[in-house]
Figure: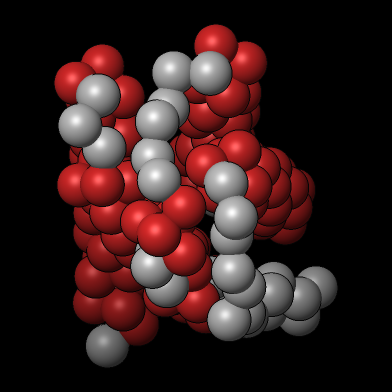
Length: 151
């Protein structure tokens, strides 16, 4: 498991994760036959760009104050999705991977919100967590519709 020694390292990890999400959604969008789902994936990619910018602003402004012990106890492995998309990935599998990514992001931002006493940051992390949970729900609904169509 990765150990972090500062909140900047945690924010860098979160921003890297957001960029991976951008790349993931853009890749999925490029492979979609259905224009509606292509647009959904591109919209999520744009939202993840916004998340990354929000995190960068937090880092740049140095608003976050968390002691090292709290940082070390984040259990970052809980927020990492190891599975990668492949060129031959089935649509169903892409939706499952997207759901897992959004769940991991939700858990990360929820934990960060719990760990800070800074009210502005708490609200920012809570808002990011809510956005990630909405993404997950959208993919769950699409998965449900897709699976129901197949059966």
